[in-house]
Length: 273
Image 1 (cartoon, rainbow, N blue to C red):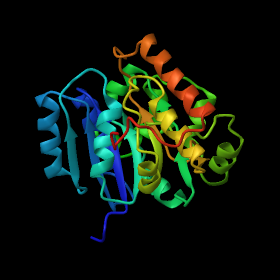
Image 2: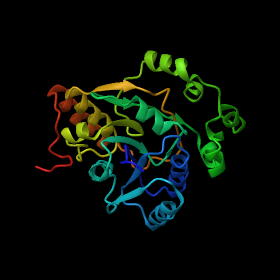
Image 3: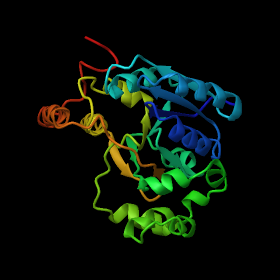
């Protein structure tokens, strides 16, 4: 195989059941010249064993980047994962987001110098998250609206994310009021741009650290491009025990400084001052 053209970073923390479903999703991709770099924020042995087993099962190479559990340190482990990426283009997603079969292909096709790509996700309730099996992932059934409705999915405008193709997805990408921000569950950009802004700000814990990275990219002159109706992943439900207002407030203050001072660099990123 030729040189790897996309590095996919998947963040995880003690969710082996969900991570397994996600890794099956990447083993079903139409575009196959990619590697997976797992950014593991301190998971226990069960996740480590799962990844070792998947290395033997899937067609793509897996690099497991792990550090000790020290609370919510996603920014730190993502920076370590960025350094390990072999490709010059990086796609980031989460260990609870199953990619549709064309997910990597869309990111590869839409990549463009001077831009990063901003995708979204399709949120599922816990009952459907549990009902998804390896078989329903590999057959693509878990992205099929009829199947999802048979599992209890409600009718909603958001369901267009699953059905939009061609002109319709382009049109919805164009008219969506949602900003083309860097979304940690579905975004991609050039490694050189991410390194140029020194990656994630490691002072930031839960809440908006991905957005802040995108804001520094924009300050650097890299524009966001909307692909939320083209690059589709389904988001499995989970509790958010790490969510706390103090962390969110601290992050909002950092983001405000990034915006007002037009910052392109953080002293608390990949390279430590």
